[in-house]
Length: 168
Image (tube, rainbow, N blue to C red; front, side, top):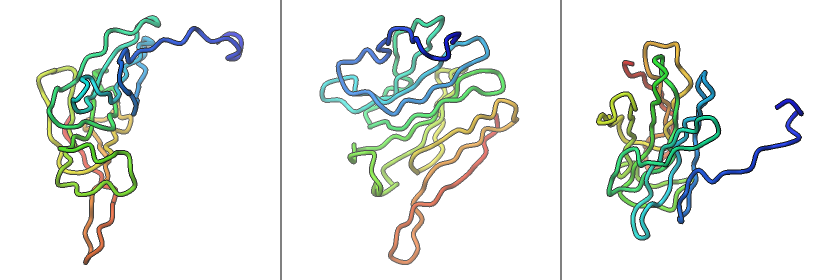
């Protein structure tokens, strides 16, 4: 701002939901558009879903689910790829499990997904795990993804951080 952040615009509710909304991730493009994703319950007795919006010239578009599912969706992350197309990753579980929590339980019930908004019908399963993250990578020829996964050693289950690359 021209006044060192002394004056802000009016706050706008971009989630527009009567239910709880959280776990926001956002990215800014070179034109000043903000792409945002978050987790929200969209039906009274339904599971949480990942919603998406674009904010252009300070005005948010109507939020839309990125992939409708009967499972609970959590912890979205959004980046722009080398073509400036939004890529979104999230985890999806058969139960709500009271997330977030330190020991989330069995990863057998949680799957990590990746979706490119360039091809809205494409959703790719990455594998089982928790808390996916896509590092900023708009200059790379591959998609780096980092996530947490259960690692069993004897009778102890530890969470470890894993890294993988997908073709862009």
